[in-house]
Image (cartoon, rainbow, N blue to C red; front, top):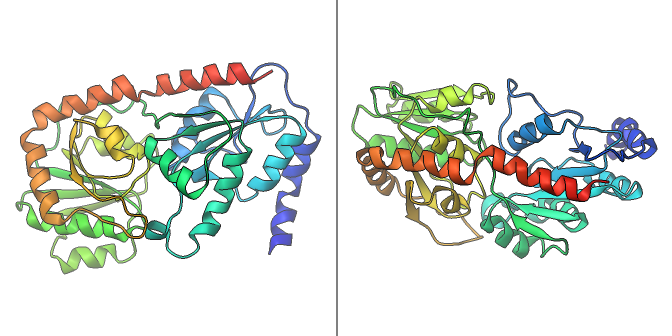
Length: 346
């Protein structure tokens, strides 16, 4: 298996090994053959790489900076880091969350191994939230390189509020195939809300989602929109009134920022890095810090918070929009990278 993997990667490794680093300003390599365009399906950590690649197109042969992310780490990260060192390239590492027993289950140490490789090989480290820094220190160890917290960005010029929200009150839920409790919690919350409420679930859903909807008699109140591209995302988010984000210990969810930029108040688990993003523009439900198991909010608490957020929407919606523009706008994020790249590149 590993022999076949190496054979597939050999052309890429040879190209990197024989290439000559540019001396004409920053040239980046993202450890991937290509970054999806905005009109292609993409989610999670790859979204910010789309923005980076638009500003600094990938240069897999003449790069002088390797920019890698923990949530999109390539399988051959160890080889790439060694090759980067041989050509004196600068390594920038963007650290999201880590694996731990309560989220990952068995094998979490193995999952963390390539993250530790990248973190400790880096010349500069960006942590996506203060929570990311704390969890990384605990499970990967503190980095020797200079670091800073730089939250994920949102393009507030693309993600904008609508002037005509849907007439039927609508909850928005971001999809996740592996953490089934998120979807189950949302369905249970919906059963406690008045009949006119509906749920719009975007992205992937866990196996058995449609059966769960049917068991609760929610067929007419739940829409599964499925996977989507970044170009489709703003239109989807504008179809809702409130974002429901019950994820426990979410490290730095860009989806939350996208919803906020569209003027959606957020009802969320006040755990992980989400409170750093939402601030006073949503309603957080307290949760303990626990690395051994998840603590999603109770559906009854979520129901009460959703109704309160809807009642206060005239106050919370503009606050959510204002917060993203002031603190998390993509242009600020790109400017910080530009200053760093100009400092590091020959």
